[in-house]
Length: 421
Ligand code: CAP
Ligand code: MG
Image 1 (spheres, rainbow, N blue to C red):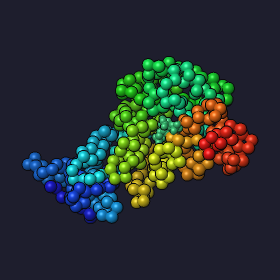
Image 2 (image 1 turned 180 degrees about the horizontal axis):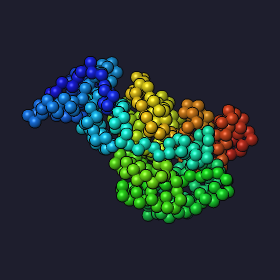
Image 3 (image 1 turned 120 degrees about the vertical axis):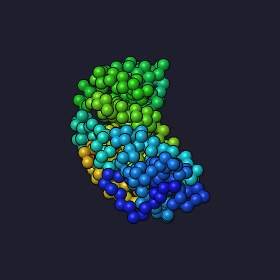
Image 4 (image 1 turned 180 degrees about the vertical axis):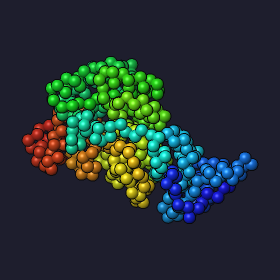
């Protein structure tokens, strides 16, 4: 086996660094690291006659940090191991076979630090936070939105009507749910046409910019066709389920450069992000999505129904918004310079309702989109009132007025607080 452990090694600026949490399987952590470093680069389970010193000198990674207490391991990979601009290949290397090796009981990819030579080959967000705020004409406050519910089941007309009432009630954004694409009872093209028509009506009636985020998730060439259709119909946003579409689908959609805001839904991430001892961190998924070029991404809602505590969600929020990330041992975050890769807007969603707004804004700041599905359409008086209650709670939070006080003279909010207290 090639010697991969070199605690004296100092990562070169052009190395890609990966941080793993390594749970060895009845072998030493050093032995496990040998297997990980080899299997993710140029090695295999035994020495081979076809290996030579030249290859090793050029492509051998270095395990330069092993913390036996936290089980945290850092590996520096020469950039030549990767095809810059090809995210599937990068993950096939450092997030591929190694997860299934007998040498580890558990293995978690906690963060990746990309070197500039790789960063330069990806587009990054087209709009970023500034571009989104300019498009929506919302300078400072958080954006508020809903997801049409039930997730699926409404026909095109009913879907458009729920969106219309949400916009009229004061929400900025209405999105399709992650499992709504083109159904027998809700055709994609019909839905887009009818919903954008009512978006225009809502804009005229409210004087506010209103956004519809159609879910274009599909086989890649079909997804591209649907995105182009949305654009032709006057849509400015598209939503994609990035995990089920995969890095290749996301890169294709981004590199089509359609000039549309890309909203990244992360459905299925929980299959590998939630176990602290095995899988891939949501931080890694979020920063990879920023690099490929989504404009906004679901990061968790801290107070809602989905897992993801404040520390993790705040750390992800910083990773996708800041220009320079300092290493943080607590949050298992590596240093990262983002150079000219624009910031991404954090989306907080899942089990939220108006009473959660002040605390969520306090934890995450104003550069967020807060989305309420059940927390809007579950209002005792329905969607329009649910949307009003959300906007009222946001206005109160922006003026630092306690919700209970604001609710005294805002009946929709009062009813929402009563239902979900
Ligand atoms: C929220 C939601 C979102 C989740 C995704 C849902 O609806 O539409 O997909 O927020 O989770 O289908 O559950 P509710 P995350 O507001 O009714 O919960 O944002 O953590 O990726
Ligand atoms: Mg959903």
